[in-house]
Length: 176
Image (cartoon, rainbow, N blue to C red):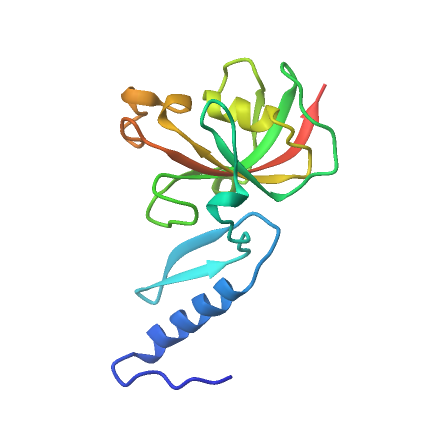
């Protein structure tokens, strides 16, 4: 299928729009890795993978209000409280995949976050998300209400008070 761009659309803009439309049509069971960079003075985006779109009914809601959806179910072990886990993640403020709302990503640092799960070293929503049956090799999208995140205080001038947080996390390992 070939579509002719409207007269008012530049070739560069049309190429970018076509690439994004193609990327949105694809569905991968991998973490979404999108980057924005400047190429020749113009913004460009690259898409490595796009997680399948899930509807609100696809999410499981826990009694605390945490919502999660397994993009890819892992086949490894489940973590138990006190074990050290390795997690790659991306966090957004407004919604999943919102380039302007991304506030943190271990992928950007090329290093997973390592911590003792269930010991209060991370926000409550993270502990709960990992301890609700997530297995090594799995990728999960998590919606964390403010009460399980940073609450009324926010965090570091980056996360506003009472913010709902959106994370895509991949459990890549468990250490004894």
